[in-house]
Length: 333
Image (cartoon, rainbow, N blue to C red; front, side, top):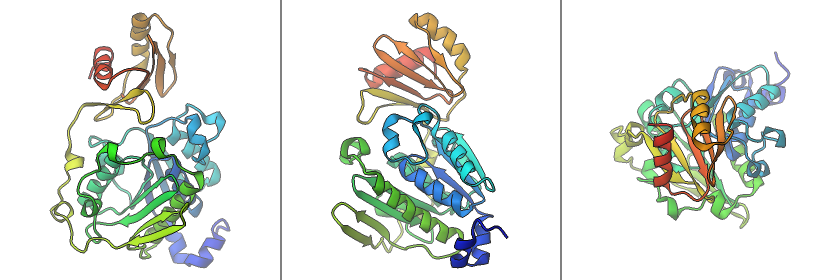
């Protein structure tokens, strides 16, 4: 019997500890909270961890995203995180999915797991996960951190209320703070991610998780446990999955806290970056850099990154409408 889990086994008991080795968990987003969640679950010996993240490591991530180092800059977060977790525990299976979670691929990406962990930073992804949980009965754990505050909530419809029982619709983007507007402290995401990982271990070993939504303001020394609605909403009662069934092709949205626009495609594709490089270099007259994940370069005053899955980041003074026009003209739909 492995000594790796000896102290954990003393507390959980041998059957519960062994059960972790048979469990499969998807972690959606391996940035701040997701890094902490994935780290603890890997060290606890969860049999399969799949890390789903569309982003690359940036300098501003290093303050709080504990799986990344300076040498990882501009590499895909999911791949770097998977590498770190394999180094921490080579006896489990860790897979990386460098892609955007959308309605077009959610069923494929989230299928077959015992638990889904929320390491995201946006409500669109959370409502999509919630829809998948409603449809399949897969439990998931909401977790979020901003400033010195954090939330953790285990959700398991139909046994528990779903996210839409509490908030029927996502809040308008301008009505909520983000890390770019309110900032965030590294220890905040550490505590929130650890709390979420603890609730995950409860669920994975057959122990009842905390029933209420836990809210903390660590900076103001406040703690609340919020009782949830006693009645179920029409969405989880009737299995209405609007977000999972949404159909769209290309979306252009302003980057939060930065000048520029992000282009997303649904479902994610597989761009021929090599062919695009030839075309774009002829168009711009500039040399563009290519790697297995992306193609990057300049057009006029814009810094542009095209990802192989079809996403694009256009940094500079550009409107979403202009960015979408550029994308349609250069890449197509």
